[in-house]
Image 1 (cartoon, rainbow, N blue to C red):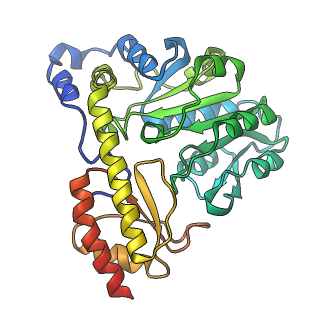
Image 2 (cartoon, one colour):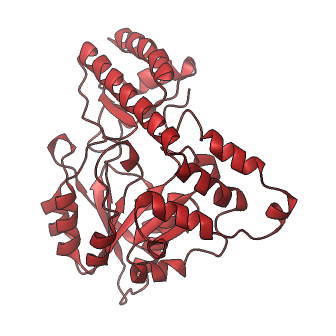
Image 3 (cartoon, helix red, strand yellow):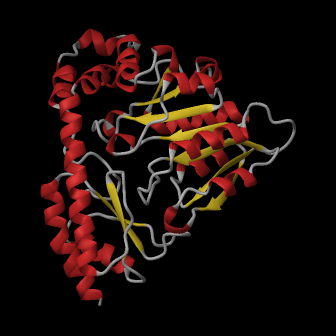
Length: 334
């Protein structure tokens, strides 16, 4: 069981499989058209298609936003700013593009550190990264705090990564709000709730003028024909997405009850995962579960996640298979 990468453990909608099966030799032999896919994504988010840039997974979107932010260097090393712990691709891509990553710790209980981020922004800061819900804790930041941060750091870009927003929380991808905050960029992915991780389909959502320099960074035909065909089918099958979101919510509840039974700290997650603090034996527990064919994520070496394991909350039937194995491993190390 792959419960370590926050994938959709049920896979994609049957409608996606039908759309892929409908592709023929000519579809594979020509460059894909993105109009239907872009309009479908825009409609699912609730913005105009001019406010959407399709990307090869959200990682490419992070790369494009960072590249656009770093374009004006003024002779200095550009900086990205974020929190710790966080998704490691922010630092990876900032460094790859010649920048330097600056981080501040999350607040107590993984509370959003609005004041610390605002204070850490300097003249070298070009882009600020926030994941909401936060990864790896799943804790939500208030949208009012995020918009306040965007206003405080303008014209520096605020990149709000909403990879897990389908599972809980309020999106900032609002047409009026994005027009009012041209330095706000929203990152979305179809890897999680929609189950398209293997097809690599993501999107940036922002003011059209803000997206323009990012469009010049994303290569032409970045999405392949299969991803372009899958997006309208995935975005159109809301019932399937909602079913899987419900599975994740029930799995989170059951994992939370497990943590209470074992006396282990956890946090209220709005994502498709739960972070559990098991203590110094986290690596041993991960190894025991791996030996049984169950993969979970060891986050214990990261600042703020000492002794923690992150578990994907997906299909309930898989969660029910994990729980007794997890309880057995915890009891063994005790």
